[in-house]
Structure formats: C-alpha cells, structure tokens
Length: 321
Image (cartoon, rainbow, N blue to C red; front, side):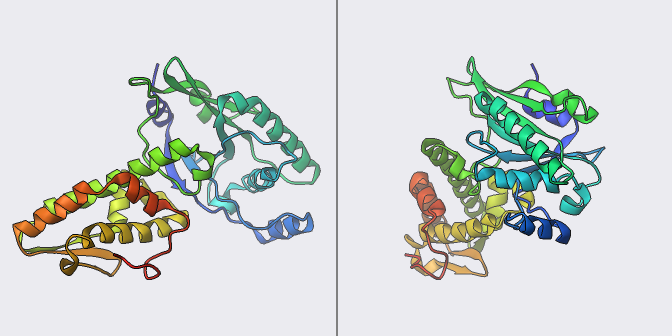
C-alpha cells in the first residue's frame, strides 16, 4: 500500500501555501453584506496545487463536522462561493476543490452539510465550488486518509487520490506521521490538549536544535547570529516560506525572545537581541561550551509553554530575564 506522501506527490500535488487569505472581490463583498454575512476573507489552512493542471485542493481542518445551521457554516459558505472563481480569489487558473479534513467518523455528516450548503448557495444565485472531505482514521495501528467528493470522478487529476490511502504505519503503537509543521497556532484549537502540547514540544525541540547547530559550528572567537526566521524554516523543513498566516510573525517574535531568554540567563554580558536576531559573543571556547550547555539544558516543554502561550506579550513588553 503506498504512503500518503508518495500517492499525493505521484498524483502531481504540491504544497502551495499555508494560511493564505483568499481575496474577496468587491461585488462578492457587497453581496455578503446584503445577506448579513461578514465580508472578512477566509483563510483556509492549506492549498495543494496540482502542478500540471493548476487545480487546487483547498484544505480546511476541523476537529468535528458541523451542520449548515452552525456558525462555522458561515465560513464554509464563503469558501464554497469564493472558490467557484479560482482566478479572483486565489490567482489560480483551474478549479479549486474545497475539502474539509476531519475525523473519518464525521465525514458523512460533513458531506451532508456541504450538500445542503451547495443547494442553498445555488438558490441564492452563487456559483459553487466542488467540495468534499478528507477523513482521517486509525485502524490496525495505521493512519488512513479517505478523500470523498460530492461529485466523484469529475476531476481526472483527483482520481488517483480518491478513496482510502495509507498515510503512515504505526511504530510501537504511535501512528503519528512526521509533522512537517508541528504546530500551527491557527489550527491549535482543533487539537486535544495532549496532542497540542506534543506538537508544540516538537517545534520547540527543532528550534533549539537549530540554535545549537549555529553555535556549535562557530570557530572562536566569533559573534554568531541566530535568525528566528531561519530557525522556523529549519524546524518546518523549509515549508515556512509558504506559511502566509499572520500568526507566523507572532511566532517569530516569540522565538526571538525565548532564544534570548535561554542564552541571556547564563551569559548576560555576551548576548544581545538586535535587528530581530539573537547575537552571541563567543570570545573563547569556554563561551561556546557555555552557550551549548544552556541550549542543551533548556527544557523544551517549558520553552514551548512560553513560546506558544496566547497570553505571552511580545518583545519590548516583558523583561528578557
């Protein structure tokens, strides 16, 4: 059975963006206001682009299904109506297929909701994008993903990935795949607390490992600069370049502060935070070993809590000590 990565890539789908805000044309904005809808543009979690055809899967992750009467359905109405015009909302040349990523047990209810919303939007005079679900399920210590469309077979490019595919096989009972982006603030509310903590710790460990590698490669005497943008890029295997959510700026600020906090605690005279980078003055090998020891002794779970705490104030608003 092929893995999800092999199947989607083999079918020609590549990651285009995370958290991209869709454009709302003026006439659509006016119509939304007339209907009493909020005109703010939706920000789907992921855009997967089919390289040769330019068709897109517009992925929105939800913890559970929702009904057409729920407040969440408001966002779905805008996604379905906006994605019917790919060029205007996303600069795409071909179809956008709105796809809700949810638990496999909720897919039938979600498909029912999408069908109801499609009928409703059509009656209101909107063009409506194709839609479906990507249901995730764990069976026999294996994670499966099942793509189900309201109109199956309509898009030739999607046929290789319609139906059930294996994402990852479990190891010692853990079926979680390698998270390319371990933690996304925009999707954190959809996670259970234990999973959210696990993901936050994964991101923090990668960031600390990046800082350790920067310090470890230095040839003393040297002043090394740790760039939080590079740290996040390394921690997400380069995907952060496509991460367009405004939450990334907040995360970058917090990475600056936490790396400064970790290093400043043990060598306050030799660590500065300027130009959105952490600078460490390594005059001697002893300085280098001190910096490495501070990074290696940092407790990822504690750093993660401060790094991702929604109540944490940004740089300049708290003491760095």
